[in-house]
Image (cartoon, rainbow, N blue to C red; front, side):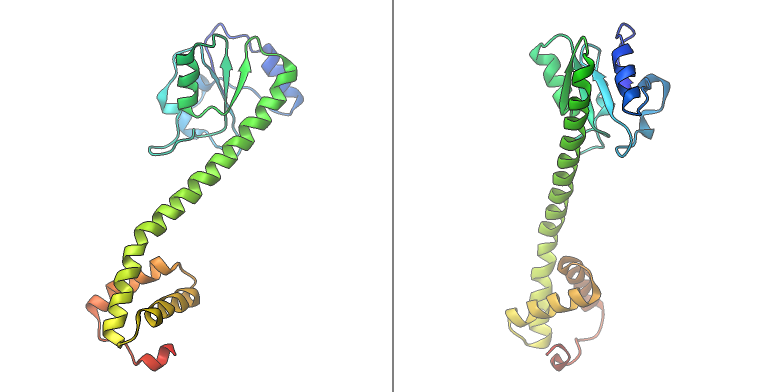
Amino acid sequence: MLLGGPGLAVETLRASFSRLGMTLVRLSDIDAAWIDAQRDILLVDGDCPLDPGLAGPAGSLIPRAPAIGLVGVEAPSRLKALMDLGVTAFLRKPVHAAAVYAALFLSVNSYNRLRGMELALADHESRRRGRRAVVKAVVQLMQAAEISDDEAYDVLRRESMRRRISIEDYAGLLIADLSVTQPLPDRKKWA
């Protein structure tokens, strides 16, 4: 997918992509919402006005797909604008065929690494928020079953593993259940 001005010569890009089994499509010819990170690569001309809508979903620090910046003028403001869009590789204009594969390789692998880190951070953030539920569930189990904090945590861990859900999710379910149902069954059940 190419986002570039009308004056951008694309013959070298088209020929290089063709040798790699890829096709070049102008982004103006398609709906940007259909960009798929599994199959598309964005080529963004840094010498054209940049559309902030190319950036990923709200809260994401990476674009919708791997992105390569086409750089003609290396002004700091233009490079920063490309970096803000999440570009992870650059091709200098005029584009030389020998540089295309390296830029593709770098862009795709950097994108995958960033996506993995973003997913891991989201998972850690979710778990961090869920720790409050774990603490509440431990306290409620201690009070309801008259057990120590270590025993209550072991109950949470064992039951969450048995149900194959995270301890934070199980604690949330247990808190909701404890607040509206009967007292817990006998503590011998958890021994």
